[in-house]
Image (cartoon, rainbow over all chains, first blue to last red):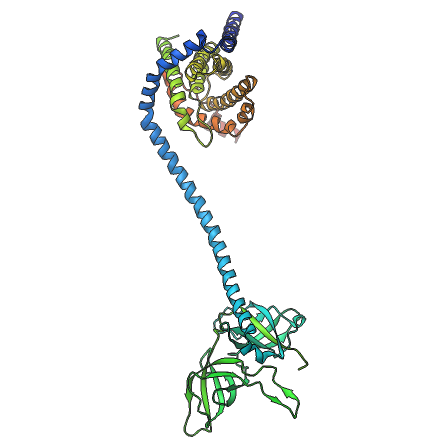
Length: 295
Length: 188
């Protein structure tokens, strides 16, 4: 490349830069209706039809571009909304759990405040607890709750669940106590047996697990007691004054309802099929009835 | 210079540059990607500068910038100055890289677009627009070059064809001569 050419192109660049600065300076120094402003306005006006024509020609391409961009945005929007949906589903599940917990707590609190029922529990202090572990298989016979000896829970304490605002029903008894947790044996456990009665008929017997999974039987009921279907079976809460021993369970605590009365002619006692009042696979909040005084 | 090349230069200078200015003002703002619209004018100036050198690059840049200044009705000479210097520098870069491969041209367009964007913000700041410099260094600094490169891929190929620019020859790697049978026998 010759030196002349280099100089020539630099001179050209210098002239163009000088022209630019000259235009800038002149444009800023003149008044709004100066010759440069007027010329600029005239050219811009003259170019309006041309600009409109370009816009008209370019319109299909611009629409195509906008359509493509809208499509891309729609996909992004769908992904964003899916994420929002997932988050909200988690929040809804959490809120539903809170609502269920609140309902359970209200039910539990309701029956403890009901004098007709809680009047029988004057010797007991109800301790609230949550089920923290439950075997995954159906008809599980033990659950773990988050209250232990540190909360005053003792072995053989009754564990109840609120049925409604007026009543609670027995679901099991405390089988093993740790400092901050306890193992509860449910009514349907094979090794479960407690003294029970049908208060409406003055009949006593022993509640044991039935032959069908999840069912109970009230056994050893004297034939002379006319127990009927739908009679409520409750704890007997026996005590022996002479020996100075008594059950850790309060009397009159509902267990279930009689669904079938078997009265074989050659037997000395009746066997009554009992259905628990509480779904033993579904509860998650319980009250442990701890004794106020020494056992 | 052949007639074909002269005709190509005239077509781009007289038709391509005004059309780019009109499209830039009428359409380009609607073609924005994320946050930046492509700089169609700079793509045309870049194609001309890379193909024909800094003189034509500077002239095309000045003309295109002046066209933008007039039609957009802002300070006369502002874009003329920026695009003139950009065209000159791109022309010099084109001479260094001659014949410029398409990928290098695209990289030059990205760099030039970013620098032009900063220069526009800087001049606007000097002329009294307080937020201009901050906007120039915002996310547009990445979005505008990206959009320009995207549009430059087909546009640059078209302009190179109009200007008669041939693709650079593929780099040849030396291939060793095959060993002849006699050499093998001699080695044995």
